[in-house]
Length: 373
Ligand SMILES: [Mg+2]
Image (cartoon, rainbow, N blue to C red):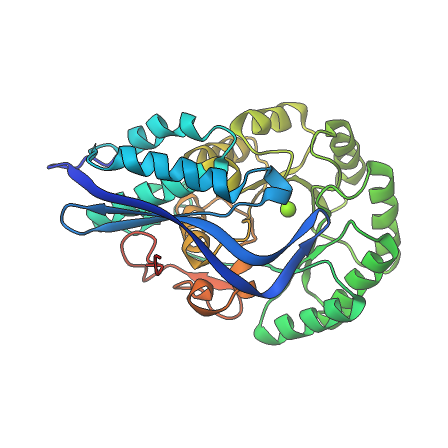
């Protein structure tokens, strides 16, 4: 985080949290559950002179156990205590409020998002300007997201891959882990519809190490090799992750922790044990400040990074795109959930229909002003 000193400091005079619901254009099915609607908690902070900052909590109860109700209650309580607060050091304020969100990391992400959005707007800089680059290469303002092929029928996988290929996507993340025979056919169908595409698999904990290796061998026989395998086994199965990482070392397939790494402490364990060869960072798992620390830790050990998302609207996806741009250290971008939404929630500035982000002309802050109930 860059320390932003505001002279004179600015004061938050209004803070409000509310639930926003919207139907998904396409249901989002994974091995452990499914989303049929967006039901997220939004936070709006307003300063005395009318500058606003927005945050969003994407609550994935089937993954994290958090609930919309508890997130709303936490954010409402924080909002009440933020009113009247003067901000001269936004990072200090984020850290002051973080302990209230133990076990509610989506709530923490929303709080940090709104405070950082507000601070960046007050300073007149795009959000990415608050995150110093991890490497000498500097910020990275242009990159492309993969697109997810959700759990479903063979025909749905084929049609999805055809549609997204026509839109210009070149990296496909196929959700697997429910039905191995069907999964195999789905992955091969995606590859047939999108020849030459970059292939990522996300099992969402649906395999054990032995079954996962056997599945990859079957794919290999068809010449289909994923560049990255996300969370093949249950989150606490570090031995299974280590077995897979050792077995796939040098194979061209990275073993990426997602559910297993939600915090900096988890990331330290992953780095120290060498149990995985890549780490997926999500703001909804760890917030922005800790997410950036995880990225710095992994990058300093040469571990490739993915930046992912829960079911997040254009606001939150854009905020994560700024995090990726500022830090500049993410090899795999998985910020595609706006493509499963309709209306204003699907419109992220600087993101085109082929999943390419370009933050070269980003406005101050996150650059998204969601309609607020
Ligand atoms: Mg995942």
